Image (cartoon, rainbow, N blue to C red):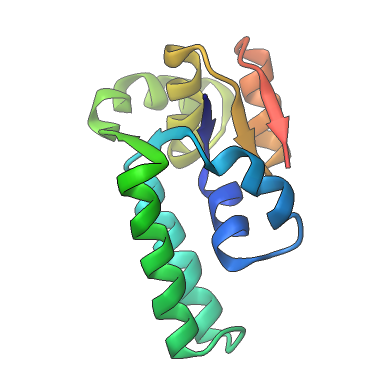
Length: 132
């Protein structure tokens, strides 16, 4: 089991460069509930930038939602906010990214991310990191 952040899940859903590698980590993962908002926003952005059409955006959103019921367990971010705030203040990592680091540390799972800064902070916190 791994903690999956939005950068990797977005890469997988949008079929961006590296999506095949990302698929190795989507089958069984955990994430903060905020990931749904972040990935939904990435789909919207791709549509607004005309990288995908409306029908494709709907399909990608449906794929995201279907993962939630089978492959991706969500944790309520409210459980993690105090620790994420402390980590963000100490390291200058965003609260959003800190949520994933805190979850990985709490669960004892590696963090799967495409964000090198987030990975570096996680590593400094004793969290295993898989960069995709």
